[in-house]
Length: 473
Image (cartoon, rainbow, N blue to C red):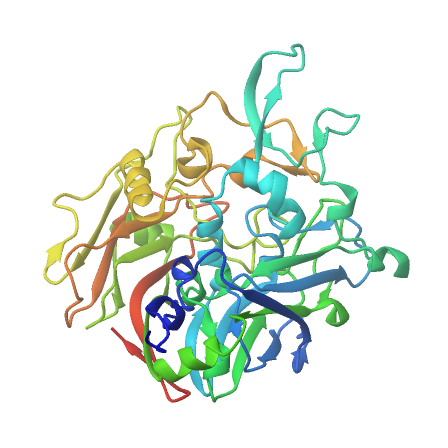
């Protein structure tokens, strides 16, 4: 009889890819609650900053969590997070660094997160995300005053009944932040952000920390302390600082260890040269205006010589004017203008050009097709027709029931007009990608002030003898 071990005894699964690890494989999880090694609160005019340093051990679980708590700095007592953002609203930029190399890096990260959050079902938001991340984008029927069965409108649903006054809707008391006293500040809730939401690399891979011989850091940039970190009720005072509670700012790192003996060491010896393919996002921002959009804009996004499978575009308003005194905050996307009949004003045209050809043979000129194209690219967004395009005159967002004292209709209608395209013509050529967009947007009130595009592109990370190399695919 041979003394050689059987293939089953010597085979080691690919620990990087979770689907290849047997369900009965020995696994141990070690959790560290890390505090930031660098922390700067920021000010009304300067961004805040925090850095966390990970230990080089085990595999980093992709669903490790970042805990954040915010407290008002003065008399405001009904402070809350935007329903589509949750606590992630405070984060402006996220960077995952290995040594001095950025594995994932994205500015205006909240804009992309808001788009991805729209893909969550209403039930998921109200039953889970409200308690974990602070998101609660959920809808309910708003019944007519003289009926218990007829509802001519719908609005937000926070999981609690309306106040005694039927036209008032609030969040649960535990979900709002109250800065009126030291005791109420202690009761401000802590919410979490999933690590894989911050860094797309972790959507498909686990990071083998124990195989890396370089420092691994997570760097977060926070919005300034006023205007952008939270939303306030209509009875609260604007421009009051909202401070991140440093003692509550923690990174919950889950380190996974596989096998009962030396499987991880043998896996490292057998994989001294490893490559990871993953997606990253590049932000491209351009200022614009209703006048410019009316004439038609062509914006070059660059991305030459890169593999770009998808492009997402949003059209936010001026965040210096519309921020904490709205329901949704700054991460919105405004739809074209409609008339009193609920119909689109003027013509709308959208297309993408690269490699000397347009992605669509003819310009897309109606919002229903744009919604379908976005669905093909990203998935189904769980937003209503009114929220997406502001069209229709019946069965729309309520104009009678206020949320935290603010009108729902004017704050939700036409604020989720996300544009998304899946590109099908291969690697981008030297001229880059062009977004062609024209239409009639409102020239008064909340006006489009920027075109913000997120280009998804493919990258490769190569781990050789503990050192990481990162380059474009």
